[in-house]
Length: 423
Ligand code: GDP
Ligand code: IMO
Ligand code: MG
Image (cartoon, rainbow, N blue to C red; front, top):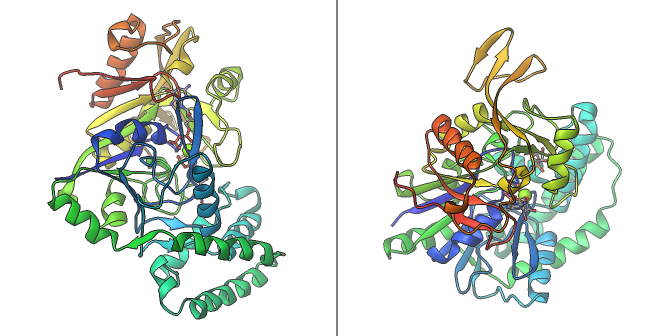
């Protein structure tokens, strides 16, 4: 068997959590392969809403195994809070949530360093989620990190050495802090982690594949936030692309199957960084209001704009997307016209290639399409799609070169339309 991958194609928050939950019945195992609690994956069903940060979104669909893979960075304090919230609402996780011993820990001082580096950058700040993601991955790459498996091997000594090193850095950055409260929560979180099965997930996953089990790898963030291919330096610190599932789970490239690429019918971004099709006018505000575009973790308003097909085509190529999934099309239900950015104009020249540098001289070139002006939120099948909506789908499929297999018309699990179109 192969591992299928589901990931975001834009700047995150495309609706990954919802679709992982919808697809989970087809899988035996769901595994997160990168990122950490910078993610906020929202699921809605039976009138309940859940936001997951580190726990995979396959946790609600019966007895499926959910794995936090080696590529993830885990904050014990936030993990504990997440586990407790789920258990309080009646979801027992102990038997079906496993954690890789090679996943790295976010230390309390990583969060402080994240804040310190952002403060130092001033107006040039990245606008991180403040969860210590960058500093935790920095320690991983510089070979100073602590892993879940270290909890069983001389942990106290390793922990104190790391904290001492971080304190020196914080002093150099002139950053004032109070570590005591953070550390207390963190150490309690460590006890919470110890309740769960800690495994060598690469062995577990490869054995499961040999046994014919189906695995879904759940991405966090989005391709345009990838450390290598995103809008650097305004990116996250991990490989969010499909290849990240290989390194983040220990799955060989030849064992990757379908790649589901998720995008919104428009586009959003949180934090700083280029966004050529951003709308700073009332149309952008309308998208924000109808789409409730506020961060699921930080509550920050998301920047909104038209769909960017230059960036999307780039993402599809790098990820090797085999199926597209379009989310939040209902948000555009009342729009008279819809625009799609098909090229960028840079210094008077049009390009369809995603450029190295995106600055203020990059201007979006739009195609305008008719809106469908129909409430789609209660639709059950593609037979009900209005003509203009079908035209939008065909236009996107033509430009992107991949079929749109799923259309989401609302946040609930049920508001999902699978299209059985021939490839
Ligand atoms: P993720 O990080 O990719 O899992 O996405 P988020 O959960 O951060 O953001 C997606 C938001 O859109 C959440 O509030 C979802 O409940 C909501 N959502 C998902 N799909 C749809 C949809 O088709 N229509 C609408 N209106 N909302 C949706
Ligand atoms: P999900 O999985 C949207 C953004 C931050 C910031 C940049 C770096 O819910 O789609 P970081 O804390 O990772 O160092 O921040 O990346 N960012 C996200 N934006 N959705 C996310 O996750 C994000 N995770 C990080 O806003 O611009
Ligand atoms: Mg999110």
